[in-house]
Image (cartoon, rainbow, N blue to C red; front, side, top):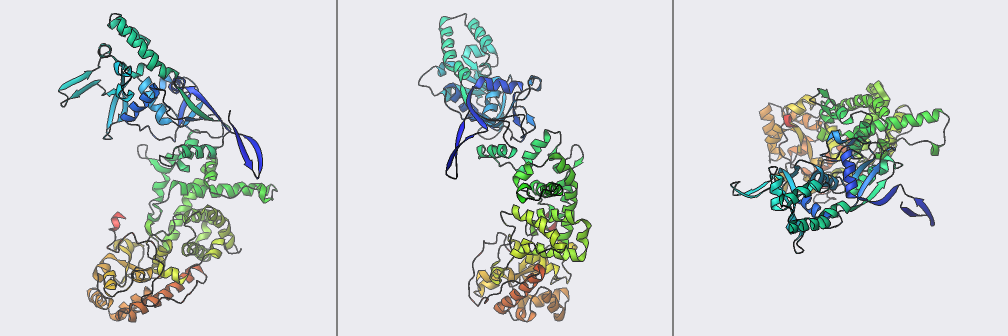
Length: 640
């Protein structure tokens, strides 16, 4: 048992760890895998080692070289996962109860099990990453030659056990029968832990030739015994380990692979209670089962909802109910009350019965969130300012129920939403904000004090003018507000509603075209600012092209049979002063529109924003991340 010294606040204390460190024989570990005592947690990825890696592993074991430690978990504790056998183990061999799960070492144990225990070729991949089936052998003569690299002594053959060249016309090595194995002095690796019958038949084949007997006995002592005596370092997490610690340990030791999210881990834990979380979320086409994600994706704005987002919303409802129940029992000391939370730990602690209780309500609330976003003129999932903010929004809507449809309630909800967007408060480390908003926004709607998000939100005029990246939440927010305030398309004259957004392929485009601005010497910080952009249809943008406003406006008026007065009206719906646009007066237009945008944002947030001295011609501002998508014609709506 390992004893760990922990130093806490200057005091040295002895703390007993929740793991044991020892060594176990490779043979015993593989036998445990073969009978089912040792299995994998269901969240483990599939076995992927290639042919060369397997040969190298076999060569290392044959020389007692270290191949790394295993990390195992005792079963029967809090961390319950659905198990699955090591790949290649036949179901009929699982005659022992599960005792331990492999957290780290799956690839090595699976490779060694398949090569050393299976009576069938190993399914692997070659250097070209193509799937192949391979049998593994050790060349007895080469293995006993001191100057030969053991990796050269380990060979693999196709499933027909023949090595050929010249496109199969010449057979170089044929081990398709035991007699051919004996004759070629090739020992099959899958007999290494049960070699006596092969040995006796080998002796008999060579008519008990003394040299051959001595050769094989030497091979047994040096190679076979290396496998049989090989000891692997093993760290065993005891069953007292918490779910969170087990999952954290698993990820720490699997840094080279895909990070497991809480959904995958929770899926494995729920599987132990015969509930298929993956099927509940993703559905199963073969069974005719529609998953939640498919139902949510019917609303385009919800296409990016991740399984972990959904679980976080569920966790907020569950942890609040748990806290409320304790308060009803008279527990009021904050230190004794569990927090309302949606952290990774909270999700991993989410009982199956809690998921089943709240998941339908949360799904319904995400659908309400989609309707709310549509009212804010956010129609496309790529235009959602903060995907993370939907976690709070859905949980809040679950608490509000049908009340969210009341005009006054919806206005307060919108104020909170836009404060989060323009305050840029949902960008990172937001789990604490999720919980705060989930508690504070409904209280605010019921007459309480302003939520932290509303109080914390701030936007400066300088920040507005510096917005250039269409990945920015505030950038996306301005695009939506212009549509919400009734912006018309400058060619069709239609307000940009849900239907016209898709039919007309609306996206945000330059007002003063980029190429024109460059010719005029206008800095990129100005012409690529969101102040110089507005939602337009793809056809309108093609007409604008690289022309000066004084040139493209008459063309738009003529093509769409629009009067100058009507065009001016539509320009004002975009917060554009027609006079400055018709005069190609970029700088006056820029400052005028920036101020109007600030007022629009103040209206949405329900609070004032910071003004500054503004820009002057040629002045530069702090550059933001380069816009990743060039201002060209948008994607065709059917592909959005």
